[in-house]
Image (cartoon, rainbow, N blue to C red; front, side, top):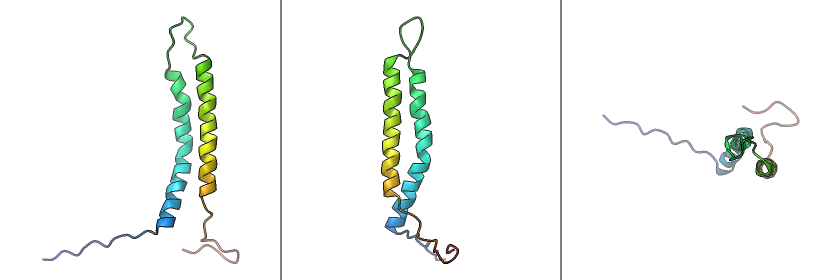
Length: 91
């Protein structure tokens, strides 16, 4: 008995990269939640247990980094070419 080889799935390199960029942009809010939650785990030696100014600097740095990464991802993502101005999208 000979087995039939599985057909290989060929994805064009450009469309594959566009899908991965879209996936990264969808994942970015969850990365932001994790980054903003990190200062909550920091402990201090004082009796009031406040994060302090370093935590505030970290939060604004993470916020700026998320804005920069989303800007780069947005500039790299191209619009879909499946929709035509004259009709519905192709299947």
